[in-house]
Each structure stands twice: as C-alpha cells, then as structure tokens.
Image 1 (cartoon, rainbow, N blue to C red):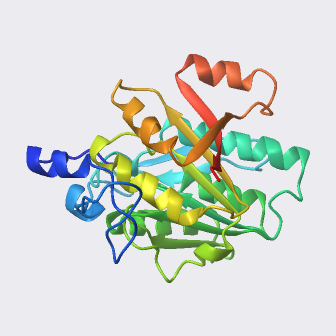
Image 2: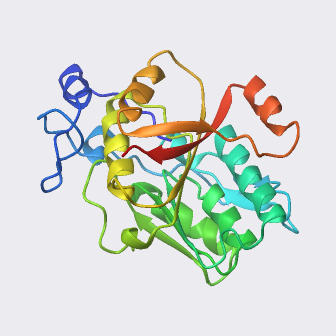
Length: 261
C-alpha cells in the first residue's frame, strides 16, 4: 500500500473509468485517459535501517516469514492485516490439498513487502510465484525474497503498475491464480486496479482470484461498484474453522472473484 497526496485535478481524472485498452491507457467503460500509477504515487527515498524487520507466523512453515519493512515508499513497505489473513488462508488450503497450487503460476498484485507471495512460494516449492508492485518497492521485495528463499528458486520480483500494459517480463497469459491483499486504499487508483484485474482475467479465462481487504472508508464502496461491473464476488467460506469470524470482526474480508461472462 502507498498513501499519496494528489492535486484535485489529478484525482478527478483518475476517478473516471478508463476506456477500452489501447496503448498504456485503458480499461473498462468510459473514454477518459487515466494518469499512470507512477504519476499518482511518486517515489520517496527509503527510510528503513537494516534492523527494521518483522516476523510473520504462517501455519505450515517451519519458521516465520521474515520481512524487512520500509515506510519510505509509503504503506506498501509495511505488513498489513489482509496480507496475513490471505497468507494463512493459502497455508490452510495447502494443508488440505497440497496439489492445489503445485505446478501453477501465481501472481500477487500490490505485493508491498512480498509477504503473501513469499509465503506461497515457501509452501509450494514447485509453484512459479511472481510478486509485483511499483518500481520503488522492488528492492525491498527482492531483499525479502532472498531473506526467506535464498537463491529465489521459485519466486520472481517484477514491476507491475496498475492501469498500464501488462509487463512482457511476466507470463501473464499463463497465470492460474491471482492474489491481492490490502489493495483497496487509494481512491484515484480504483479504476487502475480494476483495469489490471480485467487484463489478467479476460472474459472466458479459467483462473482464480483471491482478494482480501480491510474495510476502512465509505469511499471504498466505489471500488466495489466498479469491480462488480466485471466480476462476481464470492465470500471464501472454506477457511479454517473460526478463522473467518475472527478476521471479519477486525473488518477484514476474503473473497474469490469470478470474471463475468
């Protein structure tokens, strides 16, 4: 996550729905060109020292996931509740069905510290996992990947800015599962995120999207109004007994998105 202050003109432009894809402008319904995510979220220098590290326990792993954290680029350099919930769900499902993600290509959007993708790569060594975010967060994700998976055998770090063309470096056509946690936080970026989800999951493609978020503001409803034009949202109900009730009380929701035909 990244918190940025933008001027009113930029925010107003970003609040419009993007048009059908052409070049790096795109999206869904209207004809308004959107600014890039980089323009909306300018970089800032890192502020973290080598001693700033957190450990996140994930069931099924022999040791906690170690994460360097960095508030310099904004909130994206910090571990957030929805990422922990999604990591635990992936671990729970893996314990029940170890073959579920075996050999699959998994892509995490807005990875930030890389927590969810790193946990997935540790749980499923033969999955091909891609953690993605803005350029300013790539070094942090690479450091965390190396910290937990020396040599980064099955995890890849790549830039993917919402609303822009999908990077050629990522095998997006082969992605089987998309993971997204705590990506609903910055209103001008809502149409950019919807566009990227649509690009990753074109109509007719058989894929799974696990989407976890924490309710924070009434404005977040606007994101889901945009989202439901293209996706059905199904509450994940096969988590560990009592887990959903626990994180729901904290305002965290976990959905499975299905592209509308």
